[in-house]
Amino acid sequence: MPSATESSSPPKEAVEQYRPNLMNQSPAEFMRPTTRTRGTSNAKTNGVGVQVEDTRICVVMVGLPARGKSLIAQKVVRYLGWLSITAKCFNVGNYRRTATPQPNAAFFDTSNKEGERLRKAAAEAAVADMVKWFKKPDNLIAILDATNSTKARRRWIKERCDAEGIESLFVESKCDDEDIIMSNILEVKTTSPDYQGQDPEEAAKDFRERIKMYERVYETLDEDEADMTYCKIIDVGAQVIINRIQDYLQSRVVYYLMNLHIKPRSIWISRHGESMYNLSGQIGGDADLSTRGEMYAKALPDLVKQSAGDLPLTVWTSTLKRTAQTARYLPYEKLSWKALDELDSGVCDGLTYAEIAQNYPEDFKARDDDKYNYRYLGGESYRDVVIRLEPIIMELERSENILIVTHQAVLRCIYAYFMGSPQDKSPWMEVPLHTLIKLTPRAYKTEEERMFANIPAVSTFREKGSKAQHQETEESTRRNSPMISGEAKA
Ligand SMILES: Nc1ncnc2c1ncn2[C@@H]1O[C@H](COP(=O)(O)OP(=O)(O)OP(=O)(O)O)[C@@H](O)[C@H]1O
Image (cartoon, rainbow, N blue to C red; front, side):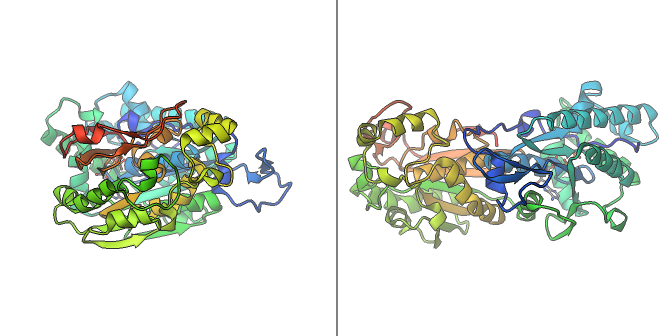
């Protein structure tokens, strides 16, 4: 077996496993076409008559230290979790740290026999756990996060996967830009658990030495590995080479990777201003803004300016009047997206919650029991909204500073993507009207700030089990803007 390699970050919480709630639909249903050949050996039925294939994929990260492997791995897990695809990251560095919590660069020298033995053991333990994890049928994608820097090592992993019937997709991040590497080291490596309590300057120096150890043996993916499935991302996506992508799920992962960038930026999200339907407690519809909603629209440019300064923004709205009216005074380019329209409440469109509880009592209860999966008669569920928002997320990943003016359910879904919120919580998240939320993606987390316009509005938040009418709230009047809420993990 080749020498063991690892990827040393990120904090454990950042790579936690997603176990989506799959009440009545298989995750595979959302990610795969339904045209697979009936009766092929790897096909099965998911309970609702849809043929799905039995694909399990190990995404094997490849690259020198500080090339963004852990960040990419963590983002892929979060993205797949959001789409109800159960994914988990196996970070070899975390396994190695149990035996060697704070090694110095010499530990990674390939002539250090004891170091080699411990690193090899860590890689074997990670792969063994991954293979075990794949035994559960819903577990579809594992990410093996390590440097995997030699051809021999990669061949060994491929053979292990082949023997278990697991597809392997190698993802290499190759970057020789010294400035990017140095800023990566300063941003994430000096605070890594490997250097806890140490002087950041010394830590950066030692990390540089560690990279040199890996450079001695590092082999990039090339024609010798032409039989393997791989995606090679060069200089943060300036060039992408893909080889032998085999199926739909692999191509979705690769497409996502192709859209990632690391330029600093923020995303601002706001609900539309209070609408006439908000005042009457009705859901859905295409109502105009109320007087107070109009006040929010007028206040929004200043609120945005306080937060974004002179940054050039693009504003995205839905196709419904209340979002366009809210955005109309904003001095930026605007785009309207059908995909940003509010969750379609089908036959309940235009009703109040009390009317829904009265006319459709069973539906009302079913929605409370499983709000994420409940689909309004003739309308949509949160799960449906997530699926239609996927192109929006992809475009957001490609873009820089964007301001989205949208609706409560849609905003909850977008927020859940950036924050990694679980599906049983995200539909219940409280998002007051007349509030601007700033999300700033950083390595391993998304920072959040909330700014209140200080313009009163009804609260449209309904607690589980309640039939409450939309109520006047003191929430937005109590606070003096802007307020900063803490940081939240992505
Ligand atoms: N494609 C990329 N190329 C270079 N840097 C990137 C890329 N994607 C993200 N980064 C940057 O990499 C940093 C995160 O480094 P990360 O810990 O993920 O590296 P790593 O390759 O996993 O290192 P190690 O092997 O030591 O664990 C962030 O600062 C992020 O901006």
